[in-house]
Length: 263
Length: 131
Image (tube, rainbow over all chains, first blue to last red; front, side):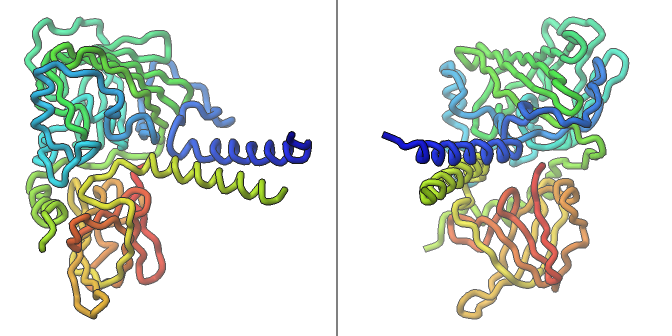
């Protein structure tokens, strides 16, 4: 039987564990669950303007492999040809399309742990990503999605406000040339993406995404939930994939790092 | 009684290490993330380019033979947020770099998130953190 003193010691240790874990949490996960800082101003209504920085966890770099639903035969055939540099099937080198500066496309770009700027003008919300120096328009003027849009790398997006703090989007019209993330999962031209950008406080956006693609997956892909923090004084830097520079990098570093060991 | 507290603290440290490792594990498979190394030498070239900056340096191995190492780092934008400039490294500078090396044994590595850093001759430490 535990004595009172032993139990106190155990509880003390347990409390130390909980405190230490809580202290570590903001650095890698669940940032949106932190208590709001006391100084935070009220969030502006129907406004996401500013530079936002991805917070750790929540599928940095891509939708986790464990969250991927079963594939259709078409998608499985594509998947088997892909040679990712990351994840459980990773091999050095590989054929990730971004290695030749193909656009990362949407929604893969949403999982890059790099800044994203929102700019709002009447009838539109614009997103600018540091990665690739890319952007897209979310039309908020009430127009519907086009019935048969020409497939593009970033698709066609519409949005509306659900209350004063949540931007809800729908997008379609994607080509099937991009991967969903660095693990080599494909998608088809039937892909549709639904998102919710909920400003939970002045400095935080909670991000939810659902990818529905009956051409490639037997069920919708839900999440993972992510959080962004407002970095009011940060500027978006220029980060294009420059083919000449990428090519030089590939020859000087990527290929030597991936080559079979010399015997 | 004390040993129990220590055990709990050790458990805490263990849990934190596991959490950190889980978060860190997103690396390119070409590099051995579990065995970071630190090398010192003379910069031969610093390439400030997108999407990867590169550092090349001459490092003397255990037998005194000079080997030119190639080091991949982050984009100029990420480095700028960490206090770097395009002229912060110049050919001839003495530096110490912590990196994760290529699994194939080639003198190539990645110095970026988490363990990556460059220490300048004057002791300044340059990180490459994404956030």
